[in-house]
Amino acid sequence: MPPSDTVKMKMTEVSHLHVENGSIMTFIELAKMLSAENSDADLSLTVEFGSEREVFAVHKFKLITHSDVFATMFDHNTKESKTYAITIEGFSISAVRNLLVFIYTGSVSLGNLELEEVFHVMLLADKYIIPALKSMCEQELISRVRPTNVAECVELADFCGANVLYEHCLSLDRNPALTITIMERMV
Image (cartoon, rainbow, N blue to C red):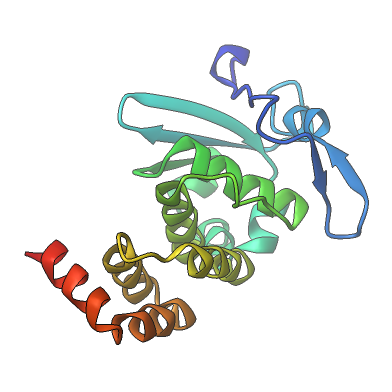
């Protein structure tokens, strides 16, 4: 994979990442792991979102360990298993980056993301069947549900089968003032 296609993660996004075993991985260490200079990487993961495109150098073992969907890709005679290349379309590069941060570290900071980015991360976690990340997104969204976004949150919760978020949104919907707000937005 040419270095020019390799993702360059922004230093301002993460300074230290807590890894599952409690150790700390610096952002630079993670960026090196996902760069073309990492000779251990055995897959390329291309993200295409609108006119944007970035390529991550990733490890098959990490992906298949955390996602049954990725595991299935490589257990069968698929294009991905033959080319060692995965393409993700329709999700923001930032959302995929956060998915990879979670896969590599077991944690991700969702609090600094825009609401729409958390939606994208949750949709990715749902699509690739990563329950722990989906649950983190669900909890983050519960803390951010407001009358102005409850309709979008309940729609996402319904689509992803996020029952806790769905019930939370419905409990807010029992507020008569909020019900009027939701109905106005849906018209």
